[in-house]
Image (tube, rainbow, N blue to C red; front, side, top):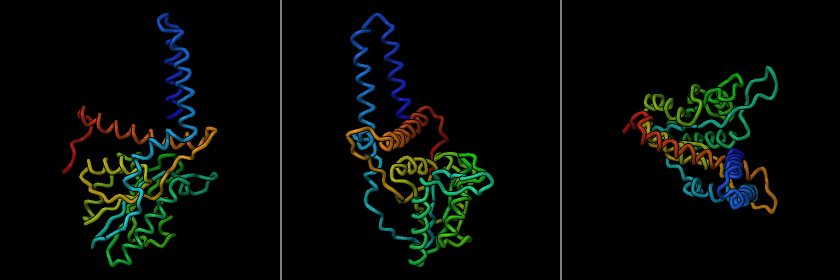
Length: 251
């Protein structure tokens, strides 16, 4: 997404250059803007600025207080298929989420509560198996009993995570719902789940920080992309609500 933004600025600059008005004045301005944005993103200041508001509310680890009947919703972050005919595996971006969900489950059981884990995600990357099914297998390896695991296998994005988890949670009737995902993803995820009438307790699995650097780093460009994706999703939600394109919010 950072690359797209840079390309849009470049195209705007080219259009300006071929217009008589302001051609010479704006040529240098557009070039400086592209270079400045690239350096701000690659060297760290821009991703740090974007990430902080998304993650700050969840910086401190949550001290869980479990109810009698709890549900843990684990949101997907992709799968990988290392080679042909091999079963899909948890992607590197999702391991922290799966681990946190397992940790939360075991804490719930130790506290004497009943707990179910809903792993949500379809086969987004076409690897032959859904995120939900792959994550359920991994959770079982981490000691979560299969009887307490539920795979939601239809959703293709965060909006659909909330949409398809709603009937599953309604059937479970938990007194508390814990939402496990990356720190930068929690704000948007909670917004979507609340729209479907699901009040969640946020649990961050990981925290993404920018790396200050004199030279631009691909890592910082990636962090910028992740953050922009979240802001775009939040903005789209509010625009769709204003236009009446989203289904009515559930109480």
